[in-house]
Picture 1 (cartoon, rainbow, N blue to C red):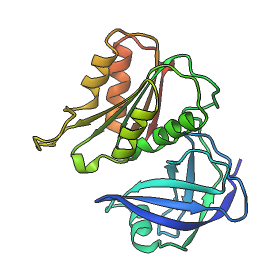
Picture 2: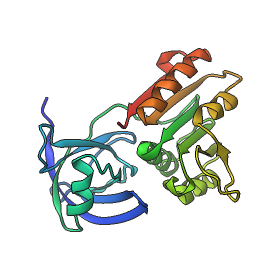
Picture 3: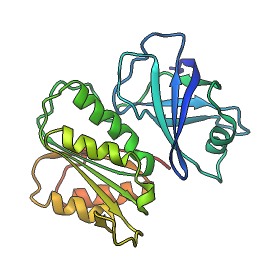
Amino acid sequence: MPYHFYTAEVTKIIDESHNTKRFFFKMPEVQDFKFGAGQFVMLDLPIDSKIKTRSYSIASAPNGTNSLELLISLNAEGLGTPYLFNQIKVGSQLPLSQPAGKFMQPAYTSIDIDICMICTGTGIAPFRAFLHDLKNRNVPHKNIDLIFGSRYEKDLLYREEMEELAEAIPGFRYTTVLSREDNPAYVGEKGYVHAVYERLYADKRPAMFYLCGWKVMIKEARDKLQAMGYDKKAIKFELYD
């Protein structure tokens, strides 16, 4: 079935890091742009490419309005993100698709199993939407982990917000893991995400794992989680490259 595209207007752009921006859109033709936490949309870009659409997870929680947020990192060697970073301004309009995807779906009213979310880079976007939705709707839940891996401390996206959510959401633990940071003032895990979830879930208790980010990380995490004894049905993933 072909996707319906809305005309979306850029209402705000925020620099989140040295190479990542937060793009805010509204769809004037609807009052409530309905989507689920964890879903994605496509932008139809006027670029010289056989495939002109680019998919991005929605970084904001459903809020009953016609607005949403996308978190996008620059790929200087690509075509899509250089266009967005260099040509798109507040007031620009782009075709934006209806929401799609079943990552972290279906909609939930309570969560009766521990959840571990593992991400790198902008893979944090659907997890941010999920956490805010969980908090906004006061969804009953068990323990929740977010393990965010990156290279340097400057690359930690939504860091203050995640730390605030860790204070506000009972049972939510936010763990950062940096592979190349040498600043002695950094307080957090060093290395890669794999050692962290292997340690935190060494008891092999029932849990659902959600993976989002770099392809290499996801493949290794899937293999390691299954080696720990977790069924592949308990491991959901979305690739970001």
